[in-house]
Image (cartoon, rainbow over all chains, first blue to last red; front, top):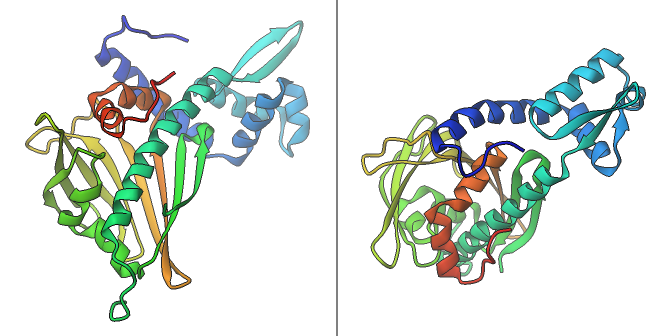
Length: 124
Length: 159
């Protein structure tokens, strides 16, 4: 993980613009979403992943590279093999933040509820 | 509580909230389409919103501020990306200044809403998506969410 309190907001935002694009592209593809799901359960070699999909080894490698750039997975070497693991910390942070967002929307929906009058036969 | 289901998807940074209201689709759509009604629920409890401008059409914008108990104002705006009254709308929510100029250095969210008639009521499905994890953290770190926390009094300190 890079960044931190010392980075200026400006640099942070400039960096993350590219990161945002990478993330959207990374998750726009069904194979890549599937790869993320699998490597979160257990790390996998690129060859093992490649065997699962009806595409070339090079194509799967490309998908993994896209996920790496989005920081959704990381790759490391064990002997001659490249292994891929899901970035659990990233996803945990995302999950905690989504819980906050959920609270915001629950509050909003409750406030909407106060604005919706009981069903009036004359309406709709 | 009108909320029936909540789906968090950390991998795609997406939150989906599904709720059902006992009113026709057209009536529920009004809480999105009428600025006076919107102001009553868009802000967190204790932070009513005032919409200064509101143009509900694709490419149209809305400009609002939320005012806290101490008079603090947070300005924001929407840019509509889809409008299909009274069934659907989508927009990007962003921070802005008092003149309505978007602050692109601060994080925004994309919001999509669909309304479907069901059993005499309306099922509202909302999908909210962050651009990136860094954006989410920044949003939470900002005063707006502190305001939410103070007002709601029930959000635990983050992480």
